[in-house]
Image (cartoon, rainbow, N blue to C red; front, side, top):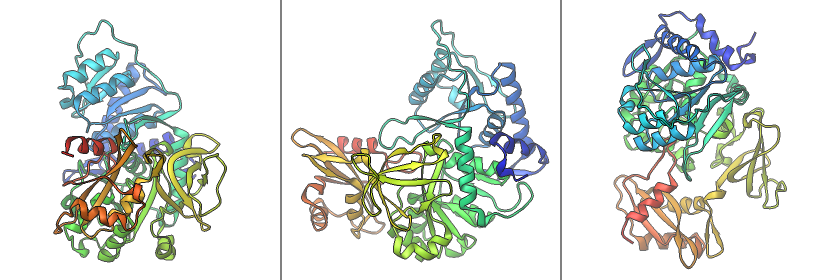
Length: 503
């Protein structure tokens, strides 16, 4: 029987057949064996059974890029429970507030997080039990007594993962992803990459590099797919050019993920091409990829950039480039995010909800089992499709700035700014304005070795290609644009930069 026809829990339970001594995860230059991961998972399942938290129970985990996290993913999902994920990168008060809102019946976190009185108090008020996850044992946390403790939300039947969105346009939302959605996404990914699959023994062959935080769908997906395919993985707490380069040189993967900001870092560091000689392609999907950046990387290293499009709500990617498409179409279709994956349908609709013909821009809708429903699911993305099925994303509907009744699409302005020879990357947001409602403003990173252009120069540059109302009223040079865990620019933090900067 093909493993792809099995349920997600069944595919994960097959790992029980792997030998205890087999190395599975490299973390900080040391290997963790399957036996070590399995032992932690066994302890976890035993404790959950003792607490009466069986199939469908919500299991709260502060999930970071450290070795215990894959063990929790495998143990929770192989037993039909729900993995309720909490972001370790957020400040203590925000983490505590997230726990209070989600109210899981149990919360597992490394000891350093339990040093926060806010977290201990929030878990106690939610009626949760707390556990320290450092080491092979799971130690209970002595939470403060709370007379008015609430009742936790104990179950989420059919839900595999509760994951928060990246929060690039506002407060993160917690999204439930069902087992059926994830199984459909795995099937779609299998279909997209089928040509590259090869039979091998469990946890042999190349290693997957996990550089995106596991609290983001890209990072969690990399770990989950590695477990399902019994593929070794390299866990990195944080992306660094030197760390990524060393992992590529040592493990020589054929494909590796590289967000746009990291791609710029590799180019700026002038990493030698021979260090990346094993790569047939890099994938990029956590943030918009400017075609000029993809071309620069391809020209420097001879490695195609395969852009991928997806969202947390769809359990990951739903469209993207393949190597075959890149060889055939890239020159004509550069700037597109590729074509729909197997089992995914795309369409673009107008303001009245009617489907638009190819070539016309509107709101993107997606129909796929990955969305957890049978009908069309409306996204917040603006885009267009062409006659060959390629999709162009033209911004987000909720990003549109209404300036005195005129619509300004930030991605249009960003594209113009990033053609300026001194601008490495730009971002545009709307600021409140008493007379016009909103006005566009732009922040930008300066290319290495270039001099930051002044406001008058950038304003004149924009006026050559933009309509008068599209030209930003302010331009702010920054060392780094504010980003969330997905490496997308965070719009709330971008707006805050202008609130703090002198006008």
